[in-house]
Image 1 (cartoon, each protein chain N blue to C red):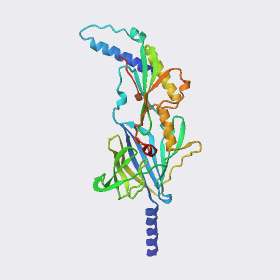
Image 2: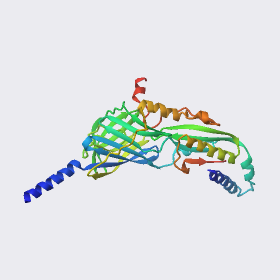
Image 3: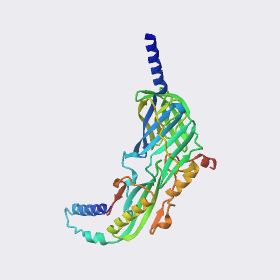
Image 4: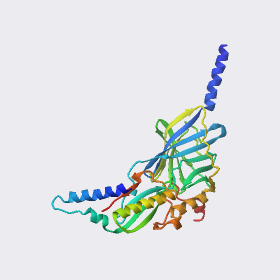
Length: 249
Length: 96
């Protein structure tokens, strides 16, 4: 009887170890604003999703947007979307959702490739023993601290491919960074499913073309009855250059 | 948005009153609201990855009130095109 009890307890604990799953909560700093993000991993199908919670965006400092030129009466900050983004990851394959004005997109980031340099530098962050990795990814240098105490191949945003969970990822101009805020353990993690039936399915290159046209002001010009001048647009976000542009350099 | 215009007018009046500690400056709000100046609204368009583009809405020569009305009109037009504004903190209006 005692032996049976032991076996039951043993299998119960084993099932907890096997099936308990983690949810990782991050903050994402983007040029003076901060928002929350969640990384969910389903061990059973080896798939992860990072949810970029745009609806939680807060300002952390006064940005240059507030500088007023003498000949300008008002400055307005407008956004192309406030819809949360979902980054679906399986191995090195990534698809993400994003709104662009009134259209929702499902974007296949088919050229994604991150080459990490792992070194032996270590430091402790929030009680976790971390090791350093660096990469040059799409025009920006990143320094990333990961911990093998939590084996996790997937990271926040588009990151993947490290032997442990990303605790801190900093872009070297300090304009962008991700920070692990807390982890949550659950018996089961449900990967959120987005109904993409009416979404426009595009490659990243096609999406970039549509987005650049909007940033260049090529949206509904014919319907306006006033003049609008557009400053020439150059990509200045977290990704500066894409693989197909590097090839054409 | 109109309240911003009136706030701006109030600021002008306040600035005028503080300057007037040693001399009397008559600030004619009516004149300010009627005088016509070029009206331009600068819009920073931001995407979720931090990329920004800039555009300028040209409201022509108009009064401060007229410029405020153009700003309302321009913002509504942007909203109809699908742009969003987080709150009124994303809008700054200065006159002076």
